Amino acid sequence: MTEEEMQQAILLRQNGMSNRKIAEYTGLPYEKIRYQCKKQGYDKAPVDESLLIKIQSRKACAYCGKPIMQNDSPGRKKRFCSDECRRAYWHLHRAEEKQRPKAIYTKVCAYCGKTFEVYGDKDRKYCSRAHYLEAHSGHLYIRKNAKEIT
Image (cartoon, rainbow, N blue to C red; front, side):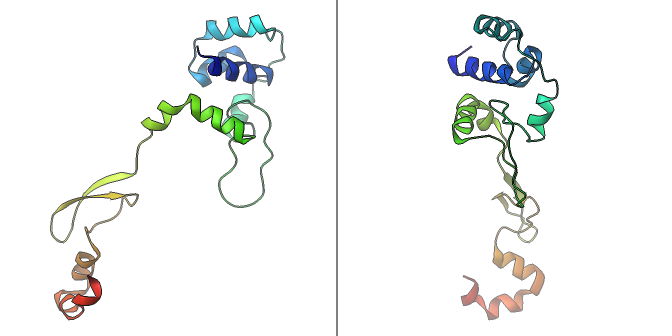
């Protein structure tokens, strides 16, 4: 258990998460969390059983468990209460970030049959814009406007 992992566990315990929930959430051994929290004097801290639900619904910080005030603006909701918590969380979870699936897909062009890789667009059917235009508009269109496409 590193110093940073211990710090996160203690912050979560301070904000009311139980030792078992901290172990589930962080993937750290329960006994080590229990020992460290007891050593720091947080074994008698009140427990908020709904803190994990609040973190998952983005009403509490994913690193320390403090409440987050969400804006009413459209877009992604905040996950962390501060930049410090965000940096600390991702410093601890670098391996998780690397294991996240990348949006690179291997496809076969519907026009020429060539295999190609595409980033992000899992529904793409053609390896190039020229093949898309040929498939949808016919060969005559491509020959006529060959300089504009390339």
